[in-house]
Amino acid sequence: MLQTKTEAGVILYRNLLRPLCIEVMIVQRVVLNSRPGKNGNPVAENFRVEEVNLSDSINEGQVQVRTLYLSVDPYMRCRMNEDTGTDYIRPWELSQVVDGGGIGIVEESKHINFTKGDFVTSFYWPWQTRVILDGNSLEKVDPQLVDGHLSYFLGAIGMPGLTSLIGIQEKGHITAGSNQTMVVSGAAGACGSLAGQIGHLMGCSRVVGICGTQEKCLFLTSELGFDAAVNYKTGNVAEQLRELCPAGVDVYFDNVGGDISDTVISQMNRNSHIILCGQISQYNKDVPYPPPLPPAVEAIQKERNITRERFLVLNYKDEFESGILQLSQWFKEGKLKIRETVTNGLENMGAAFQSMMTGGNIGKQIVCISEETSV
Image 1 (cartoon, rainbow, N blue to C red):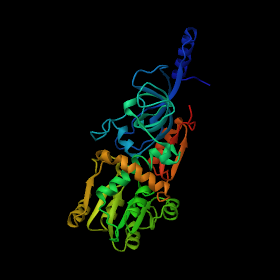
Image 2 (tube, helix red, strand yellow):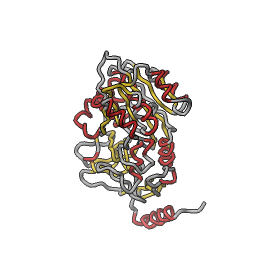
Image 3 (cartoon, helix red, strand yellow):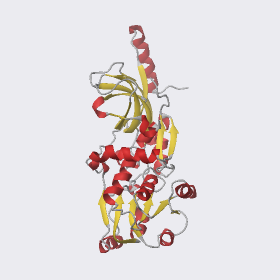
Image 4 (tube, helix red, strand yellow):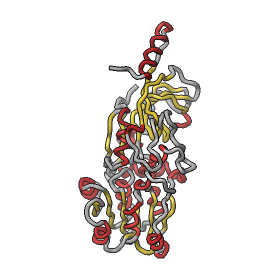
């Protein structure tokens, strides 16, 4: 088998260090190999795996961690561009390690807050099998909150769960007992699958999900308690919604944007509310966020006084702790069902990202890097 330049370099480096008796730790990482372009579809080949040397010592304030689980999320699509279009998310750099939500276990610590064996998380975790991080960038997590399912901290008991919960609390204006109908697009995804359940828990009398396969529709209604589901790839979405939401739509949890959202908004009631969580159908297009509505739909929004405000969960950090405790309580009580699509191996990060962006996942898309939770 032919060696790549990286592999040859690693072998040479090992041979040079062997006489010096220096321990070398070689780790794998994923870097951004190419950009799909603002109007392009991301593919697995936009990423590549490399081997690099990890220092065998850490400085004061640092920790060495072994990666257990990594997250891929729709918002990452904008990080593949040279300009993310936002001031709070930085772009990934070509040939540099990619980062995102991650969970790991501390193997060595020189930070006062962490000891060997602690489980930690970060929103900017490098896609790397092992990594040395500034301890101030990490948060300790309690496995008891998720009954030992550590990957849930990247999904239902993490940022997607908080986004769904706080988004509904802050922008949904749900009043228990008022017979409100909620529609969720991207309903079988990481946020959508939680939002529908939370809508019921907070008092919506009817929840209808929109997704792209019959399997997902059945999942929503038979496992998650949605009252009905629409497969947007079959039949007429507008007609199905009129049948399933006879009293109109009061709350719309919008994950996708585009034609589907235009259809939903057209059936929303006066003084209703849109929770603007994501616009995944628009992420491969060079358009501003949130994308402007077509003139006819914008006219409906204004005429019916429908709120459509940008929602950013990072603006509600003071609610994170109580939100995590609430999500954990619902999960433990069996009121919040959690589903994951798990891919194994760092080498499959790119494939997992591509699949997630094309609807290949049900629930949260997770990549398992290591299942060994002891040090």
